[in-house]
Amino acid sequence: MFNKSDSYDIFCGKEQISLLSFLLAVISIIGTICGLITNCINLKILTHKRYLTTTLSIYLIVLCFTDMVALLINILLSKIFVIAKWSKSVAFTNFWYKAMLVLYPIMAIIVSTCALIICALSIHYLIRIASPVKCSGSQLPERTICLVIILAIVFAILTSIPCFFELEIKSCYNEETNSLRDVLMSSWSDPIYHTLTESWKFLLQCLIPYSVLITISVLISIEAKTPIWTDDCVSFP
Image 1 (cartoon, rainbow, N blue to C red):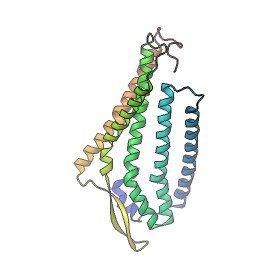
Image 2: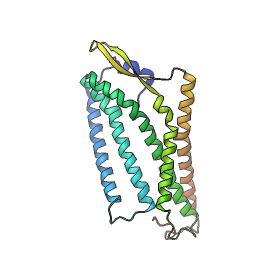
Image 3: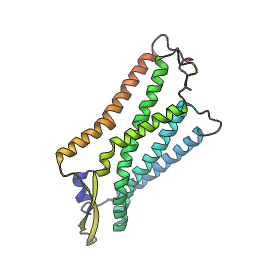
Image 4: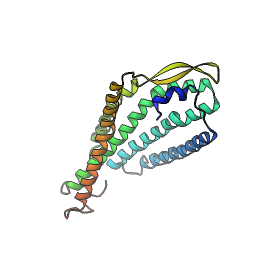
């Protein structure tokens, strides 16, 4: 989201925000608002009383919700900061720094949750395709699906615990305003510990989930080409 190695120079006012960056931030915010509206429409459709509640719809509802949260946090983490720097408001930027301490780990949790939910959905349909004899009318109970979703969220929180301790707020002298202001800095002084933590997050949040997803996608493609596979047997619930 930002380069912590250059955080002191950036946040203490040594880097100027250009007009182009400001305009791009505004355009990105408009695009994000369109994405939020689209997700709201999808949620309205998926939760409509005439829409049958299925395994797929439950997963999609969760994905729409997490995507909305990710879009909102993305605005607050990056685009709002550009506007704050452009406005040169010390109070605005200081408030953003404090919010960053909470929003940064939440963003990591959301990203991990999305990847795990997609993996769970793929595993569900791999089972349906690989077991055509049992798939007739089969659908996971809502309680089971909710349990899978809860476990995915809990696992995402556990893997994102280091993010809660990754940043800290310090004060620095700002030459532009001739005053002290808050600044975000990495709280890890030991590079070895930092490397191990980043490797841990990459392994559990990216490498394992996406490797599982790619493997499942390949298996679904193989199973879908087998002679016993039929459209009637693996119809989506």
